[in-house]
Image (cartoon, rainbow, N blue to C red; front, side, top):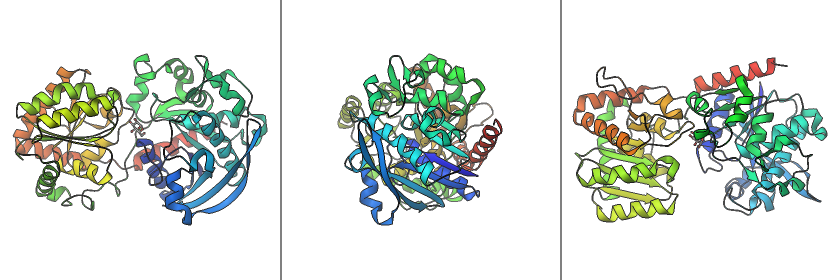
Length: 474
Ligand code: GLC
């Protein structure tokens, strides 16, 4: 089957979040299954600096924006069996170090949408499925179905996947003059242009990245205004869980960690990695359970709870704690202060380092992920693969992937709490700490976590099934 993925970021080319991991691995898995898979994304600055020599230009032309004809180049390289196409425009993408957050994001991703259409017309004709991701691609199914210039693409089936509904691509209606298409209600929500809504309303099928998040999105608390719009899609909205790339995340071959290990060498491997991680952060007392976090530092990742619960536990000598990530300056300052007060037991690194992240996954005993909401979450999957037991808020994909420890049956692959408050998180951590003390049970849980199948195979099959279903709808 000919499948084209579209999104604004994909590993290894550009990454700000989990979307990049998905677009770096799901297309590859489908290609390995024998499908003919392409990926279209903007040519961000980092791609220009790192991949220029590997790129072949396959098309050049212009795209109309407002009264101007803007340059478009389409460049290709092949990666892991996937043909990756970059939309090249120096002004919109090449000169900026960041991917989003500019005053003209609406214009940039509006241009990108027309660029994707051009790619489908000129380079990738007769695709069975165009699989779009997040708000940056929301305009595309609208253009394909409703814009008369693009009638040739009307019958191509589209899937639109929501990776995080909090980001919607909302712009003032003044943007209309730059979108080179006719106005319709489908483009608007609450008196502004909303690309996410457009994608939800106009794709043939809408999906999100876990069954529980799909259910969560019926409620205003989770849906950021989109609950009604999603409800209108009825059965055409479904949830498929993400996988991870088992080659990229493999404790047995990971050369970023102190001592690689598989399940049979788990105990000695984790011990060596814990020691190295503690040295790296200057922490003392390896007998204490080491709780790690790798996360964007934001309220939605549960940092208000973490700030309430973790420091007193560290102070009481119950745990050590390491935090890796960046984000909200308020929380960065708060945790810097905690570190300054307890440097031997609480370590921080503000920024991102892939190698250090892997060391946290490998060297921690427990991995904390108390997100207020979580569409899927990938870190908990990586943590389990590295034998680190996640402590999670049972929401979205966290609920679907971590089986909370049951004191009576001894089943589980981690620890969970139901209510998003400090007390519940504390109880879950106390339970985890006490199980850490019974080292046989803890080891059994670690081995079980490592043995889970988080590969893409199952999910990729689910997507293929869905593609066939959508194509059958005629
Ligand atoms: C977003 C979500 C995260 C999900 C990822 C990939 O980053 O916040 O939960 O795992 O997308 O789908």
